[in-house]
Length: 448
Image 1 (cartoon, helix red, strand yellow):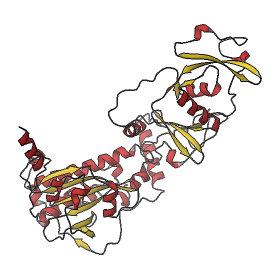
Image 2 (tube, one colour):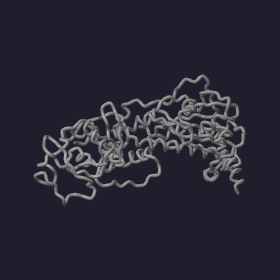
Image 3 (cartoon, helix red, strand yellow):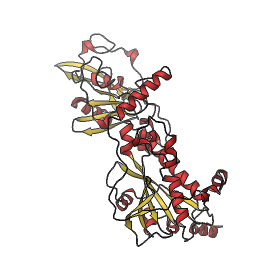
Image 4 (cartoon, helix red, strand yellow):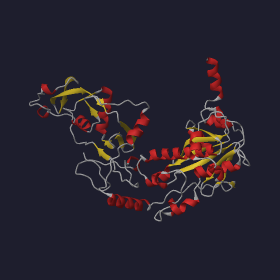
């Protein structure tokens, strides 16, 4: 077996390679060039049983009793090649950090902690399943079992499994994007900068996905944002007054406040373009007030408008380039917002809110490794915090939630592809500052 080190060079060995973009454990477009994962297939040439004169730790078919452990649960005999072979089975423990994927080419075992992938030959796949059901294996007498143990997929000793409070999906994501092996560890600044520039040049050979440019029948230009209403509040005042509220009043927000919040939170600030380094290409010169991974601004903003001056209730797409709104659809029953947000009824009184969607395709363009999914989540968090601070600066309160029906939200917003996904909702409006919803507060009061 051999480890895949890069796209062109392999260490000697008799093996097969399974390589598909979905399984490339690499970041070939990012600043750090991460290594391609080990993609290996277990040998198909090994015999299932050793004859007695080749059995481990013994001669003439005799096993060394001193090598046996308490986990050797039984000893039996198997007929192989017309001769009796002694096999010592042990209790099998599976690595908790592996999972199986079934593809047209076969079954892949993925060690998401060590970033290794294996394409199993059919006899190896059958053997792995048999071990799983019988919970026993024979690494001393069975060559396949020995390889499985050598690759740390199965062991005769229990694996250490630290406690984890969520389900296996979150564990796969966290460990699978942790401690990614790097092809290059720069020795100094010159080597780092050289690698960085080369990676940027390679990335720019591919066309970056553009921001959403769907045709909308109604486009509404917003007035030039008023920074004066934001400047009346200090940063400390905005930070200290920000709070998550669950009691809102049905009160209209002025278009001046509304437009200023959108621009301060999501707009591309033209006055910042002169500060950008001259070597940055035109496609990446947009800047918001919040940081963005790779300078990509990989997000789209959809505004849920309920009570905003001069705007009809509806869902709008915000264009950060020209500070305008495009009508996605009108809404006749604004109470449907709470049905999308897991029944959180108090959201119905929000003046407006924003569904923030991540543009994964822009991230994929630069960062080929799934570790960049972490950055996508961080980007959304930055934008939501800026939205909340801008709202607080003009005297509004906010509430945010990731509890929503993804597929229903996507349908309403007109999102029909995985390269764009909604990750968060954040709302704004007038409030008395109550952080508990009225009904819960009433029910708790009755229990006292």
